[in-house]
Image 1 (cartoon, rainbow, N blue to C red):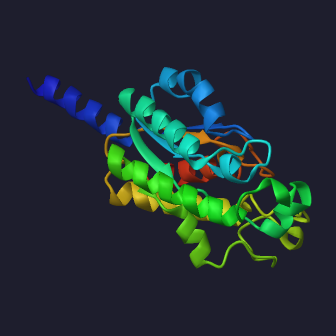
Image 2 (image 1 turned 180 degrees about the vertical axis):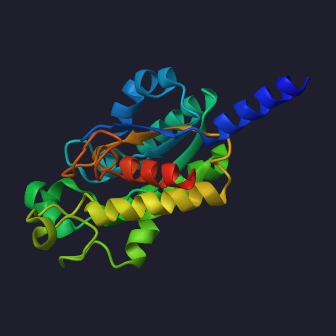
Length: 238
């Protein structure tokens, strides 16, 4: 009897202290349409416990992927429902603000029906509304970056620019920006007690999830937010 109890105790300890698995399933240029096309293969088939989803930047500001808000909302909701039906907990992340000056260097201004950041802000409201009606979690990273004065043009900016990375980008985070994203996510997951039972976490999204311009892009190593999040999670087990 004592041996059986000891085995059970050891199994419980091993279960609660095992390393987290963080999967990076970000692909550059992906819109909600693209995510729908691969959600079965890249999310459902992998059976994650928790899915962090960031989508909307391309739908809102990539001139080759622009869609009306109604279509964006419908596709986003479809994604949320499919992931939730798979049994995973869902955390939505609102899209980040962009530097429109840089954006218009590579996209024609006339293709936009309104200022790109107004589109982003409207998408943010869509995401928050879907989170409320579908009863899933939502982290407003958009506000976190806006509160820090982003996007900026200085070397200290958290969004890639000419001063900090020699790129007139204005869309993707720097390494420091990814560290902030991971820290905010870790704090959010911990505050909402989403780490007690979820050990297999999948990050689903576009180039921001992928980790454009970062070491380890597309993986759970290097400077991507999934990589930094994994290090924070692993450190919490020590």
